Length: 166
Picture 1: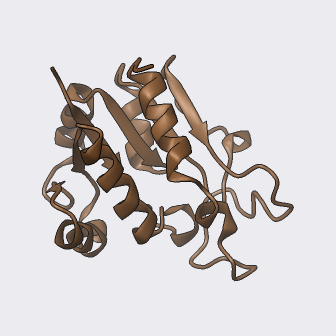
Picture 2: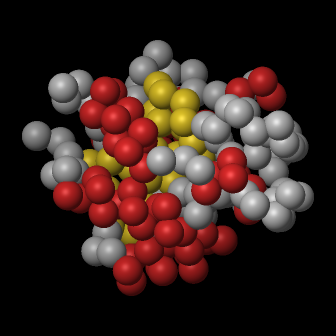
């Protein structure tokens, strides 16, 4: 049984990136649920992903793959969990189900999964969201609630829903 789940928690923009402590929680939950998560990202994501790998035993491919190789990993996965980033677009080019986590952006800007099987995770009741169409280097309000308020349990419910686990 394929248990590979690709996780792409990083973005060039801070306000689109999943907070490190949240990504750590997610990886732990995936492993405890019997999945084999693999991190992907560009060379600029290496420090973030190396820290995750140091804290949790996870396959870290960040900075080691070309975009085509990342696509191949996504394509072989049961699921892609990603933020609004290049990985989401790579996932959309495959038939892999996608969980897209929105922070400072949302689907109104036209960047959303093109796969038929997808779930959007976002905090909708923030008056400051979306604050930008591409992302920012910091939260203009200083609280980063658009990412900090995302519950790992809702991501895991979406994982189980897309993988068809009751």
